[in-house]
Image: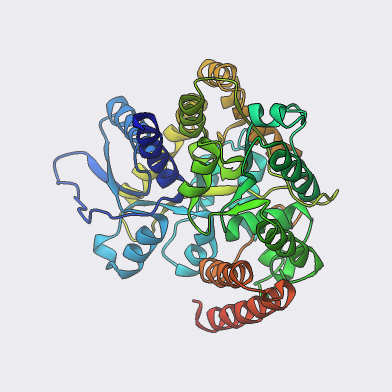
Length: 448
């Protein structure tokens, strides 16, 4: 009982990190005339990642005397964005961390100084940056924000349960049909109650759609031109929601609804042999699962299973740091100096080792701390290999859409209706797409 309670507590912290949803502090100190320029950073990293971020801040502050970076935790990404929108220009920070879903909103806001401006002014070399991170935050030829905590979805699975069921633990499921077959065998053997634990996540749906090579919205997922219509209800999308519905209806999958903690707990307690989760709390999650099993090799990771297509692959997730143009030139320059410090290979390697987020510098993988992390946690290589295996096209470059969070909410509603009733998956997905198109049209009418 004590171990279960401890596991639950750690898992709550780990998945809170992945969800980044909570309260915040509005304190926003400004520089004094005689001291260093204060650079205020609003962030959404609770512990333990918040502590790793603070170490980077302390390191920067100790290396120079012109700037003093101050972190202010603002709760989750949505909390932070709402506070930014509602704050007057004098109370906004110099830097803000926001999820990938806010990219179009920030571009539309008119209060951003693109990173491109600093790069051009200084001749800063970005050739060592992760190409997919550069692509994600580059719109119409302008690089807008500094990629920071980069993530992707992966499969966590129980090797012991696989072996007990007579499955090859070195060949985890790659397709949705593979997951079905493995789940049937796991349950029939008595290894687990469920094959897989599924969290109802619009992001997981997006990623599976990207793996099928299909678009989420028109105009090249919003990257060839502003999106005007949701198109996720095509045959690829219908296949995904139908598979989800059938897995739950037939008792092959546990329906964790929107609860990421519940989904992972079913894996930790042995009730399910698989769960899809983010790399956002990879190190903590693997440590937790190891604690649950008393076996450091019991739990493993694999690429997220999904539709297979030569044009498909995962899209980058996570968040970036944005420089706000309303602050003084001195604060903006201080923000840029801090961003360069954060982006150094050594700091990116340490961040990767501490959290499991992808480094945004390729050379960071060769830093001793990153090499040691992969040796200790081989599971780290899964997400890296999966990202690099994805082709470079509009399906994998990520959705660029102002009201992406609102559209995601509507999509989750469709899933909830389907999983709780006999509703037709195709019809519900079509209705969600029609409503999403209305949301997009309204945003396009009111966007700056």
